[in-house]
Length: 199
Image 1: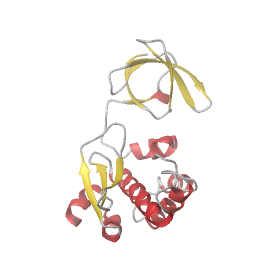
Image 2: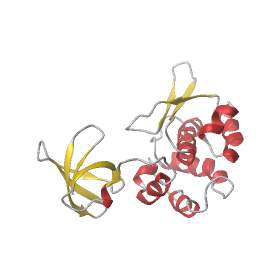
Image 3: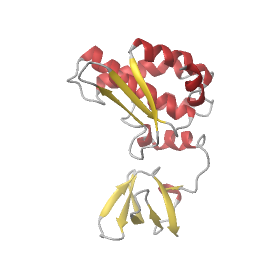
Image 4: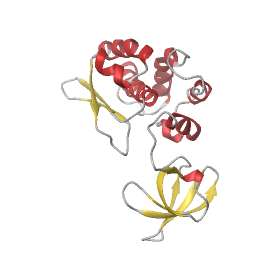
């Protein structure tokens, strides 16, 4: 397992992650990219646990995702299965499990202040923390995608599912964008990745 995880995790995080996987008796599967999620946790009727994490994540996002999913399992085991998936109990568990990793031997110095801020009150997805998501993206291989916040108002862009939108004004945190085919207005996170068609 160590050799496999060395490909996906920062080196100093490998052994502590293996310990967590063994401690919680998790079947860890590294799977092909899923657009809608980085990872997930399932408990099967026989009581066994499976966590899946996307193979295309950079090392730092992979680590955050793995600990996020282990935190689901640990929170359910500690507090029972009636808790909210991303409620207070999960947040406390995620913070506690993540804390040993938030140091310069695991993460680059540029990410540490953003991680410290994020983990004061972790969200259901690191993607909803725009600052952290953009900083993590710096460690991905290059792509031809843009963030919505980078595009000028009025730009036309395409989503991963082929739908085409026009960027409108910013509402507090998110951008109003009109789907060209239907005229419906949708709200987009500033760090949503899209393919620019025209400015």
